[in-house]
Length: 106
Image (cartoon, rainbow, N blue to C red; front, side, top):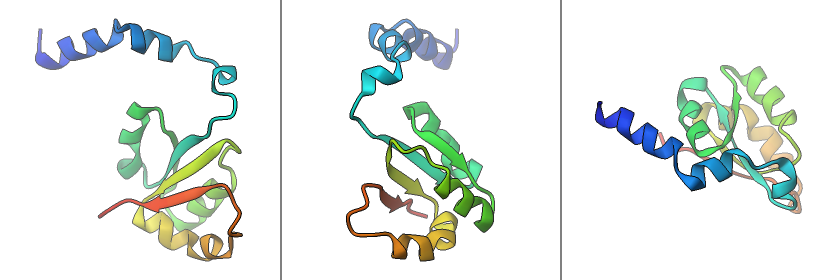
């Protein structure tokens, strides 16, 4: 058995992993989720941490993905290209808006 196979097997049988996989949206009442928005190759790894993915390969797709994010997303991790595409929308957002965003380092 390879080291990676043993690692995934031990994670799969972890009581914490089992509990986390059986949670329903009702278990998260009042909590906000994290999303990663941008080019698929740059954001796909965040899925392993349970982050909502919004793949967007161009500026129009980034704007559409931003507008369609679920309402319970409170933090969005943006790639540099997605941030550039969303600059006007981000600048126009009101100071009291709940959704926070951060740009990934290069």
